Length: 257
Image (cartoon, rainbow, N blue to C red; front, top):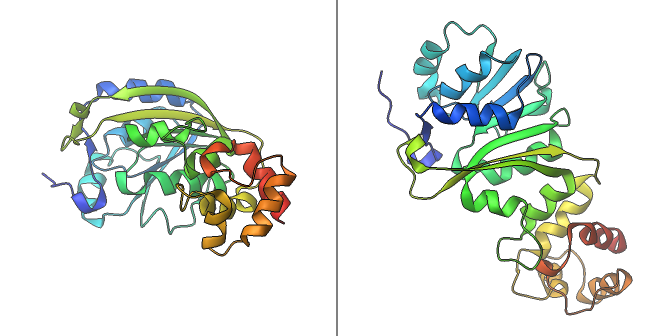
């Protein structure tokens, strides 16, 4: 059956199976892997994963896809379809617990989903996600660059990049107007993101302002208190968020506590 993608859900379905081999390589799929896929769409990637791993948890928000997905995956007994909003579901409660997130992420949830799974799905060790090229560039951007932001800090505190592959719009239906990329990364030992996330997000909420002003504007701490904390980590009072390395945000959060 034909299915019209919904722009409001950021749906751009994979239709070119040639990209599947690249995904499999970057994800380093193993027969005993339990994989989480968010946004299976028409099931092309889901079927590819199911042929190569132990089990796939496929989470889809669009219940209108139930019939085409079920039909496409009818012979795949190792796929568990879950219908719901991935940002609201308790993905950490999935059984068996997923070890890898491999997905063509819907554009409108890609950034928050990456951060949420890093913070809350402790079983996940590896990610291989298709996202807008702009989002991919942000994940591992360097300080003092335009792409560097809150998501850069949070991702780099929790993960290291293991792979990258630029992707043409022609592999999707409908073709997006922006470039895409596959980015793979693996969890590293780092601080609990919950301890530093409020400071990071507040710092970049007004990125053109000095960091002390930005934190004060969101009510996280007074300007004077932030300036004291900056001095404690060896940074001048006039520092801006984009100037601090991820590790310095950890030190700043500790100093503010």
